[in-house]
Length: 129
Image (cartoon, rainbow, N blue to C red; front, side, top):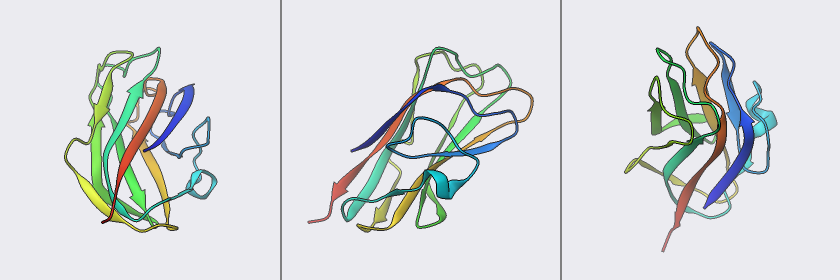
């Protein structure tokens, strides 16, 4: 598993931000938040945990696993009005990944209000046989 904690950071209204394991804040620069895939396999079960502030009413947050510089199908939307402390996931979506290539998690917040705070995130990599 690859996991991280953001110490209740939020994404600015209308902004795109990036995170990866080993960082404690978001960045508008993907290269500043790029991580490295540790094993070859299948990445799945991307999740995000809202912190002390829930997602604002009327505002969604789109969460996408990026791999080797491109968006993947591993994505989900934190719905408007989601409660503080709630967990959101991509469920059964997955993508093949290769050890040593880059990844990041892209966060896109709707314009109008900052996102809810983010307490943690992660995804699993099922090692190739």
